[in-house]
Length: 347
Image 1: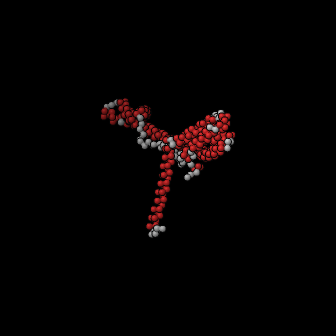
Image 2: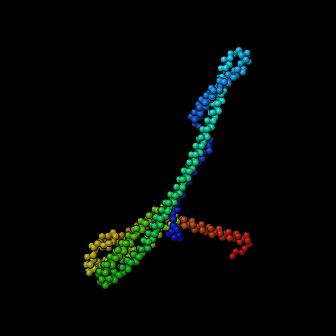
Image 3: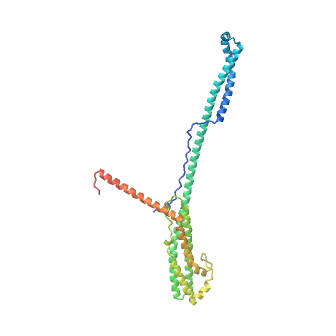
C-alpha cells in the first residue's frame, strides 16, 4: 500500500486541438474577379492608346500603294482602319495578360493569408494546450495537497477517539468505586470528566464527518490512487454502551440522597464542555449527541459520492491485481516455452 506521500491526484488530460489545413483550391469572389477585369481593361486601353497610333501609321505607310490601287481607299481611311485594328488587338492582348496576372496574384495572396492564418491557429492551439497542461498539473497538485491534509487530519482524529473511549470506561469504573466508598466530590468530578471525554468524542466524530465529505467531494471525477476514507464509524469503537453505562451510574448518584444533594449544587454550574452550557445539560443529553455524531459519520462515508468513489478505488485495485496476474502468467508461459525450445525438463 502506498505511503501518504505517494498518494496523488493525477492531472486531467489536456485536449490538443489540431488546426485543420485547407487543401481546397483558392476561389476568388465575383467582386474580386470583376475588379481585376476592370483594372486590366483600363490598363489595356491605356497601353493600346500609346502603341496603336505609331503602329497604325507604319502599317498604313507600308501597304498604302497596294491598298489604294486595289480598293481605292484614301490614305486617311487606311490609317483609321489600321489604328482601330491595332488598338483593339493591343487592348485585348494586354487586358487578358494583365487579368491573368492579377487573378494569379490575388490567389497567391489569399493562399498566403490562409497559410499564415493556419500557422497562427497552430501556434494558438499549441499555446492553449501547454496552458491547459500547466493548469491541470497545478490543479492536481493543489488537490493532492488538500486531500493529503484531509487524510492526515482524519488519521490523527481517529487515533484519538479510542483513547477517549478507553479513558471514559476507566473513569466510569472509578466513579462506581467512588460511589461505593461514598466519595461524593470525586464521584461527580469523574462524571464531569466522562462527560468531557464523550463530548470530545462526539465533536471529533462530527469533524470526521466533515472531513469525509470534503475527502470524497475533492476526489469526485478525478483520477487518483488515494484509498477509501480510512475512518469508519464501525472502526472507531462503539460509544453507545459506554453512554448507557454513563447514564446508569449518573442515575445511581442522582437517586442517592447524599450524592443528589451534591449534584443539585453542581448541575447548574457552567462547564467547558462543547455544545453544553451546564453540567446537567451535558449529562442529560450526551447519549443522544454521541449517537447522532456516529450516524452523521455513517452517512458521510456511505453517501452516493462516497459509494461511487469507493467503487472506483475498488475497481482500480482489481484491475491492478489482474494486470499483475496476467504479467505473471505471461512470464511463466515464456519460461515454459523457453524450456521446450531448449529441451529442458521442467523443474
